[in-house]
Length: 333
Image 1 (tube, rainbow, N blue to C red):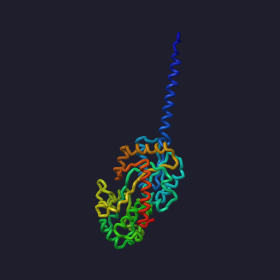
Image 2: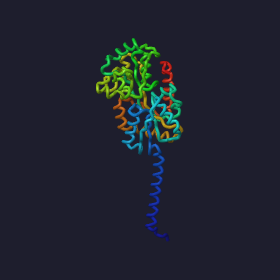
Image 3: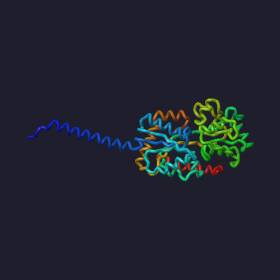
Image 4: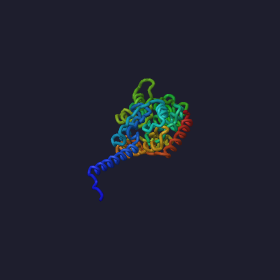
């Protein structure tokens, strides 16, 4: 006759099974979470306050707000059109929990040979959005329209320096496209690089010697001063007007060939595994689906252009070649 099981034995067995279940669940959770979910670093390869820094900090807030990672920090590594940051990232082989903001400016720096690395020394994760350039002057400038500026510029290109960000970056490319469109010889384009939109704005608002009268930068770099009435926007380099902003486009002005767009994206360290790359891609995919990121895109007048995987790799390769060709064509490299 079979003996009756001891209740204590049954309870003990159940406890073992439950604990074993928790252990399996914890193991699966840890495997699913990975280092990137536990602690993520976003590198902005520029000084605080610039466009890359803005992307990193907006991403940080969306990730935090929605609990997509446990901790996320932003680090700034400025210099040389982002290629100093890229150089640092390229030496972090196999680090699975760091991503760096990148985009058009960095490709320009790479094409000009500002560093010894390229985006081939990273792991492409995602293209996020497009950011649009604005040509602006101070509110007391004699130029009230784009055509007034262009007329004066054609007459004396060397006498009207154009200010913008890093040499070879998107601001410089727009200046070069504009010179080409209106017949200003490339060797007469006087471009003055600045460390960021803040420094450029100070220069535009100053009447001191050595400052610039016309500036090109991202809309968000000029936004506060435009809204305050201290800067006058002459045109926006975008396919259509920015929502709620009364700035004519280059297409409206009759110069559709001036069309260089500044895209923003994220890359990881070289040498990470396919699973680690997928983890970063998943995190970013979840981030762009949040209401906080949607609000960020709308607030900053960006245009979402999300792209991942092989398509993003192909885009980078083609964009790098396109920018290198454009720099040579414009005599900027």
